[in-house]
Image (cartoon, rainbow, N blue to C red; front, side, top):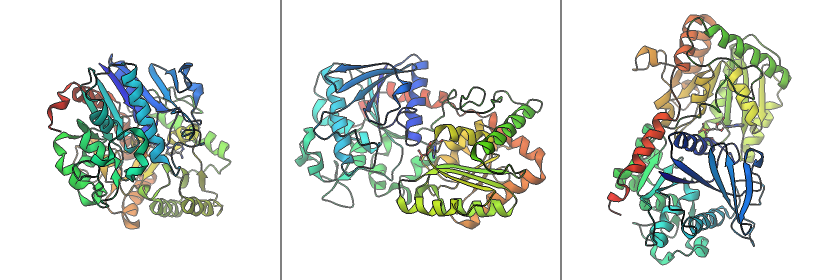
Length: 487
Ligand code: ADP
């Protein structure tokens, strides 16, 4: 099949968060299965172009093509005057709606003008929610082999709400849009809602974990679109993301100070994992100029936004230090007040706490390898990748039971799963008590019951979080009779 992925992020060349990892990992697995995959991405001025081979301008300075390993990437730069993608950032501009609308229009023009003839187009999140809308409103009657447009929701919080005026330049008949059965926002009748439009217009809608699929159909998880999702739930599926097995592999991770095994670990080879993690911790502490403590190392690698539970992170830091542990946080925040709060904490100079307010891929890998535990106290979490990465690196997740975390982290003491599937510590409440319940058990287990701790490491490292099963699920969806649902 020929599948075109259209998205705002792609690891490692344009990464803000997990969306980038998903586009990369899913596309790689699809090519491994023998499918032809093209990825369309805005040509941001911040792209890490060094990863793209054979990069060349392919048409009139607006289209560039290149090769990211086995993946064909087309970079689209809608023409000036606005310099939409020369802003030194991926998101966060006042005219983000216009920027991504222009990208979507240019992407569809490219696909249909050049008669690329894909079997399926797969769009992601509000930034490319206009793809199914443009297809149905403008391009569907053009000659094409397209079976349909799949739309994946990675996060309900960001919906692309805007005024009809914001979309004036992309050729949609906007007088048709402000209706409840089209793109009208359910809470603000004068606004359009792009994410809603994507849900209404796409032939199939997916989200990134089975639990999140259920949560987004409730007022707590739907961010105002729960009724829309309930109405269209026949075309909605939750498919659990994976992680790329090569990119996240301690056996060959180029960022690690010391590589260590991750496959087929048993009691006799676990000592090599433990020694490898120890060596990574020693070198990480040297790199960060922090004290190398003997206590358990609890880490956080996260965007610092309310969704991720920043208050709970701070509380966990306090508790970890009280219990004689070491705490390292790597986080970046687009919210100035949150950035300042963590900056103030960083300045407190506790020798067992290191707070790094940065976005650094290499450092993230080094922390996953060095840590004993990774804390993920999200208030909601569509899928979450860091818990899967942690498990692969022999690091035990401490996670709140929500969204994809509920589908991947199973409490060693309380899970209803068979004992051999349990892999971490979980908590339900989104308050300090909740964190304490899981964190204090984890710290105690590490300090007092190494045998149990090692069993958890073994079980986690043995679990399959690759893209294999998810990619097969997507292929099944792409192959299905996508247009059978009445539109
Ligand atoms: P989200 O997409 O909501 O940010 P995910 O868990 O799905 O959360 O994905 C997060 C991705 O971003 C992971 O690959 C993680 O390692 C990475 N990441 C998060 N924060 C940082 C940071 N400060 N520096 C480097 N990588 C980070």
